[in-house]
Image 1 (tube, rainbow, N blue to C red):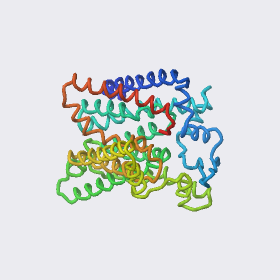
Image 2 (image 1 turned 60 degrees about the horizontal axis):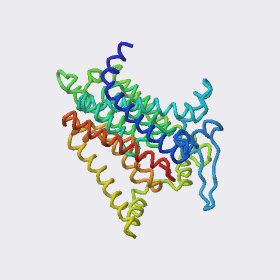
Image 3 (image 1 turned 60 degrees about the vertical axis):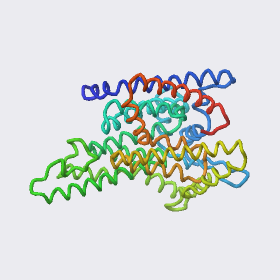
Image 4 (image 1 turned 120 degrees about the vertical axis):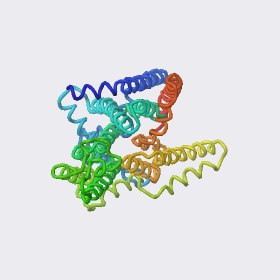
Length: 401
């Protein structure tokens, strides 16, 4: 408990600020929904993907919907960790599956906030860590962090896996990457970060071993800033290799299981996604979607907004590179961003799919941390109100988010 108390005290301002922002969002959602005769809790727990997750928790896999156009929506598209947790909570408490998903998301969102703080503090200091968490909380689609979706759970696992990589805790990093791979398809990004970091670390250790008097600073890659990541010899090298080995087992195991279940081999999961008209086309479909917005004046404004949004995402990534973000963060963010922007469908969901790419916020967090506290507070407070209003409007719309 003592070991946990000190880090928790350091993260307390970030976690309290995060809880305040999310509480504001939930209160605004409750008021807005009540004014429209809707249940805010139902909107959070029983719409769109949340229904698919609870159905998996209740009935298992095998459910599918055949649409009039011939598409087949199978629940095999949804990774199993969240439904497993919903089922576990339902088994040991009076909570329904939907209640369990809501509880998991609330707890996971706090864990994600803490993980984001840990990563940002490790790289840029405590003040930047607090700002990074607050910026993640006030994202326009931040309300998703409180929904019975898998984004909060995935972000928590990803953030802590990245922190474990940065501090040389390879078994922890690999285990969390495995769990992230059981949560969402984009778990591939966490695996890629662990593998790239491990390969670079092995290469650094190999180079250091040729020196007469190798030191921790020469053996450890530059992105590792913890004594636990000193040159791997014996047990440390074994832990690193094992962490890399177990990292992809979650995603690979589920994908192979889906292929076996569908009888379509290792690539069967791609056929499942194709039934949802989802795939990876390098962004061609998204580009056509944006281009179609310019066929009339009102929709052209949305097209301009989409272009500005994509440009901002890419600019933040470039700034992160120029500021020397650690390699594992750049790899993780690059894969998440590429998978989100280059998916061939569900264009309205792209802001939500980008939400786990929290390192994109680090340049903004660093700038905010350098500003006066009063100015930063006004900026965050204003954006928090706007985010709460937008989230309530968005979730009460036709969606899906």
